[in-house]
Length: 151
Image 1 (cartoon, helix red, strand yellow):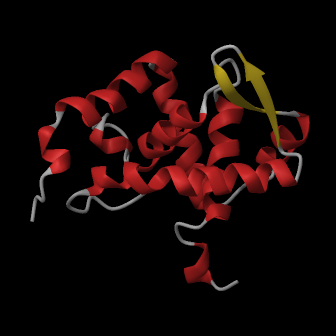
Image 2 (image 1 turned 120 degrees about the vertical axis):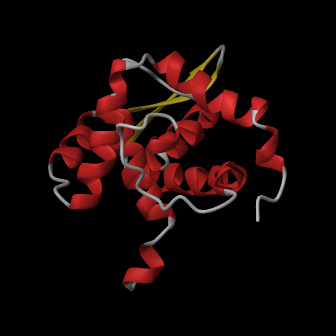
């Protein structure tokens, strides 16, 4: 796999997911919530000016939410195939959390990229999980520009 194949790949997404889940240990999010958390981490500056976004501020970036779900599903499949996540079947839906193995893997991630992901979700931890979810939902539902071409 070359460097370009890793960008926006299921593997890159899987690594972000285990970092996010390991930091938010007290929360056990659903697939939709993981999609929103992933978007939040990648575009953190859209929600908190003190944070640096990982992905560039391109026009129409909000539309990533429409395609991010597929990448998150593929990333979760990678993590599940390697026993790096725990899947919880609950009355409120299917929820995902880390396990001891994934927490150990996260400790060994030392790249600048993983540091940025960690920083964005850690510094956001001053907000509650519900506040983060609300801010992404607000972007989706209240920003009519998300559905209009901004070019």
